[in-house]
Amino acid sequence: MTAHTLAGALADDGRRRIFAAIVLGATSATEVAERAGLPARVVLTGVRRLTDAGLVTGADGVLAADEASLRAAARDSSRAVDAEPGVDPVLRTFLRGDVLVGLPAQRSRRRVLLAHIAERSFESGTRYPERAVDDALKPWCAAGGSDHATLRRYLIDERLLTREHGIYQRL
Image (cartoon, rainbow, N blue to C red; front, side, top):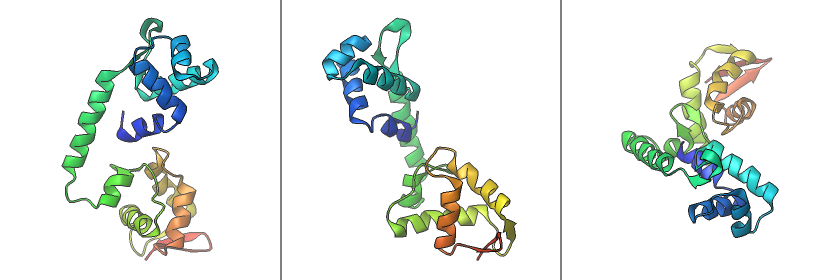
């Protein structure tokens, strides 16, 4: 589990309430629904999402917080930050290795991230057909932080790539 997965799993108010109920001792979906004040259907969907994220275990039908998984995520996250002391904070925030976990809303930060992606994905002066550009950008999108078409559009908008008749080039 990554910090991004953890944040995504707990981004919803209902899932936070479900997780809190489980942490505070609710061991069944019925108990969680009562303590969290949520409909059973919402609880079942939330528990499934929390289980998929590695926050909750449901061994033998008994719900519990997966404390070992949380400890491992905290340990791995601190190592990742410590291992990259010279990395730009924008890159450290929005990249995990060579995978994009999100796009900054602020244009100046987005440009830093896009310049990094362009530099690592494309040779200056080389001409690329659109399929090659898409193939180079898809691995950056593996975590669902964006999609390759959005990245391609931003790279064009920021003039990090040029496009003419379906042929792309990094300046």
